[in-house]
Length: 321
Image 1 (tube, one colour):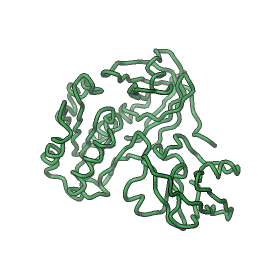
Image 2: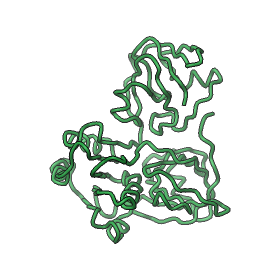
Image 3: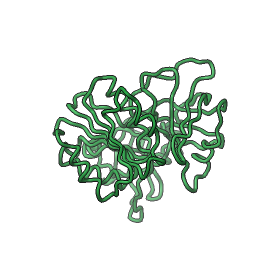
Image 4: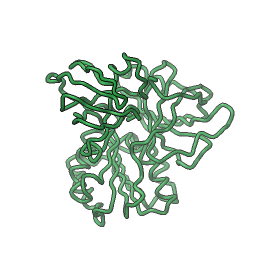
């Protein structure tokens, strides 16, 4: 199976949220519920051109009537975001079921959400959920300007958790760590930090706040694949828990070898971002190259993304989820 099953949805509302960013509200054609979903989740979206991309959900997770995504028009788009910026009310798209890699920790004493640019989308759904739970949280949103900040009107005027939101427009990257350290007062090892945005932004958030809460308590959501040097890749053997063995050449992925041999694996992005092909590791040492597993997951070494990650040992034994 090359991707999760998709369902048809109708675009019921289109809002220009910021310069180059629009939101699409999605409903079922017959009015049946789409939610609730788990805060922080994303969905596969197949647009008019047939291109599949992942978008975070940013509506209240307990709102079963519709789902909301926000799409930033990317420079050099090959038909994904550009096509969704042409979609109109009444058009039909297809989406997969919500999947979640950025979950709200149930046992944290405080939650700090740190967003950069379009990275506010999954954190907005988490803010809704944390507010619903009555949790202690704050959302810090960095954008180059108000005109480029998605959902600025909502975040400035939503009365029920407006006091939890801190908007930072035009703060230079070099000045952000000091600001974050100021707002991290009161956080400790029982707290959690969640961040989403450009890679350099998230790296800085991790470097600044991991010493405060612990590296395993900083949760990162990536939108793009990690860049990896593959020039020294070596072949290895992958064995399924059923006993079947397959040779993985230096220039092929585990996923492609398994699919070539008729083994069904759930997959979507095939870039190590979405997490749909993550599977268990029973023996051997994985070489993690994904952007979806947490630092703690990677250190445990008991799961891996089959589309991009490889082996540091001559053999891996895996189980498919």
